[in-house]
Length: 249
Image (tube, rainbow, N blue to C red; front, side, top):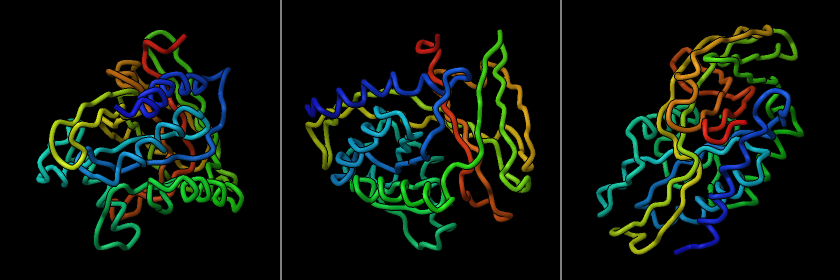
């Protein structure tokens, strides 16, 4: 068992709490890791994602894909929808093929998710050159409602989708077959669903959603993401995280 990875992922349960209004820390960026339990190169990237989640200044999401299942182990967290999202990113980046472990940074570029320096470097470079998260998102909960306030764009213009990414914050898995046979890995923030909840048009906007739609069975990342006319995911302008119900005050 990779004890270091298990402990790091367990700590990730705590890091998302500051996403609520009144205790908000603006995320440095969004890291979407496309990974698989059947990929021998992925465990180091899963550890990097857990470390990012533990640190708490990045929205860290794990998308388990299903195209390595033929290698002898069906990813217990794999979803065809995750594979579809990765392929859409591939088209957006003009890439003919996708790979694991792929880390997409702020919806703008991708690097090998196992390379800490590459992930950190991309986040820092974007933050420094104006390609980081430029739109503040605040989240509050009142009764059975969750209110999402998205600030105006710096120039007051632009369109983006309000995207809800639901995830389970911690999933320890013992892999019994395939390239990672015998390993137990605690996966931080594995994505369970992605849905569009509204449109933002560059001006300050408020979205009210049922609490049950935001906190389903785990946590929820809120992404303000541009989408092309062809339906391809683009730059992420703002982000916040709503922690699981058990972790909220």
